[in-house]
Length: 607
Image (cartoon, rainbow, N blue to C red; front, side, top):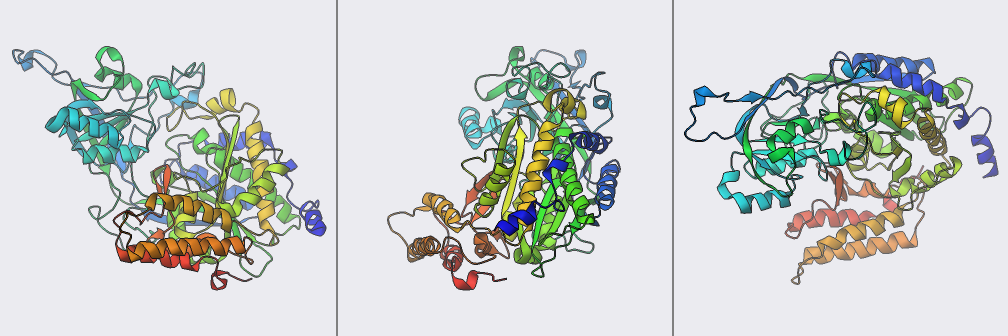
């Protein structure tokens, strides 16, 4: 062990002290010279820059292209009016008024004045929707249940005005569609990240009233038309009508300035209900295939086992994307530089290191999901872990996640970095590029960052100005994140670092199964499931540190589904996703059989 520590700390090995805040500032500025909407011509600047930087420090690069379904918005409009009294002659008054959907930049930050992506929701439906406005709160199932109770049939054909927050935006639109609404408008409330929180841009870091939050409304991951397989050239594609997770009604993000026009006296009501206004949404899109590009930088490992460690950040954004995800991409490039320079001087890792710059994350984790679908068998066999870097420097509050197998390495890296690891490291929620690695390939995942509130999320105001003026002027948080990444990746690069987390995985699995307790008339299938759960618990208790290469989650990966153990739903997650109170015996048996493999010698991969 002493020899191992000495080797890891030798002058040849990557050194966290080599991380440069000044260099990271330059990186962020270079990445944010042009918008990076996935697959756009403007995004090629950042793609080529990342590829060149990987090569410059000695990494072998592999750009990989996919042709995906990600319709581009070619036109959008929002008209509104108040209901007219019956005795008013329509021709004597303006019938519909068009709303100004533009975001307002400011001279203090010339980048905010650049022409950027119009207000849009990725993977929304095209078309026109017209109807009375109903305020639907946060757009939860409970909110729409209350609206149905209050409005009855009047809810049908309405336009739902929904506040961002509490729930992934795609689920908000899906809930509105299920309730019979014809369209959706989603706005960001000033109480959440605007004037109620403090000074707005350019004087402060919070969202001004014209700020608009874009984002995907796809309730799934990857290319919707190639579910379960990669969108490579010549790949089979299903029709849009067959795709699961696409919403069927048009939706549009709007500003608080727009939204308050629909409220009486410009104030958000205290309860859901109909408003005294009508709206007409029009969305036009080009649904021709879009080419996205992942860029990989590789440092080959010396060990013949083929084991690999991956670290990645998404490169695409909804505009200039300084915070989301210029911060993560900047950290990725800095970590790659530190490792690349050490590699060119003679240091070599045991395990192959792969630096991943993802495209298409903002549209539903498309780039990372397609990569995992294409290389799933290799990842299941050889991937030791995946580290995700998404928004790593937006405030002073450190946070981290790690699945049980990576919890100890994360704690070691935090200690070396002078940071306190969160006490409850465990399975993460959804919403970023770690998901397909865990859910489709059973790979252990981790992520971290320094976070804090601010008001530029998915807006044209997410530029280096807000980072350099308010969030991280000296790039100290960027540097801390990169140093932690160096420590974690260096620790995992050694074949002596083992992943042990079976007991913690099993504990969390039991907690997840608690919601599945069947009714009094317990079927034989349910009895078998809970018996298998108890037996798997005993095996992991008896063997808390299994042999080399053990991965708990591998037993639960089904070829036609993904993880039988854990599944994302928006930003949250669900344990035993195929099991409900009325699951069929065949479905219960499938998960039972996976439990029966846990902890058995035949399930342990030897090196």
